[in-house]
Amino acid sequence: MAHFVFMLTHDDRTVDNAAEIVPTLADTGLRYIGFKDVGADLARQRELTSLAHDAGFEVMLEVVSTSKEAELSSLRSAAEAGFDWVLGGTHGADTAGMLPDGVRYCPFPGQVVDHPSVLLGTMDEIAADAERLTGLDHVAGLDLLAYRHPTANTLELIRAVVQASSGPVIVAGSIASIERAVAVSEAGAWGYTIGSAIFDGLLPGAPSIADQVRRVLEDTDSGADIATETQT
Image (cartoon, rainbow, N blue to C red; front, top):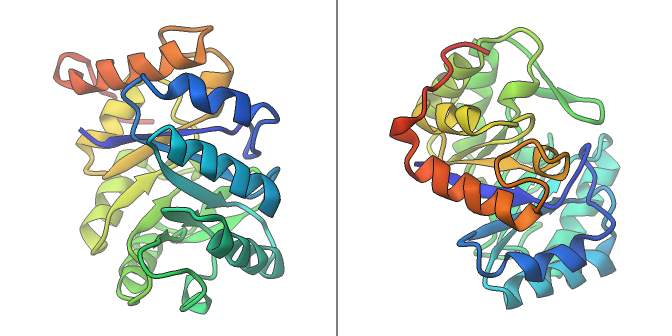
């Protein structure tokens, strides 16, 4: 099954109480945790990354700023904050050398606009961009906003991007059920993120955040027993 990344975010913004939540997740079995650049300046990024590392997590920053200047500023901050992964951003070709060696960089393929982010472009265009980006030496994989596309067959889009890519594909945004997480995994994604759905209490184990995280891990591990969706 694909890797679950719990995002300390709601509506594409880092939640105010993220630092209080991190220690409560240490015994859930979770491996990957993340948050957004929006709502977390450099000092807060350092604080949250340190807390997450102390709790045993690999830490991801997702860049959702809408301007090139803000995006590159977030990459510069990420270089100082100690992240293991940096996801998102739409200027992947312009970021070579901005992150330390060992930090996995996974930008958005396709045309990503607005905040909260929306993915545009045809399936062929997005897949071609995925191939181009993962052909760059400094790009490790991709952050795919598959469920944020207004018209695409989401699972077909995931499969096309996975096939075109030479690195891990993480599906981010609008995954609000166990069934959807399983479907993403079966479409070939390396991982997927869930944030808002847990803060909204939409998953088994609610209202507890830690219990919802546990249930995602437990229920997707036995995903063969869950009926998966075939169409969004």
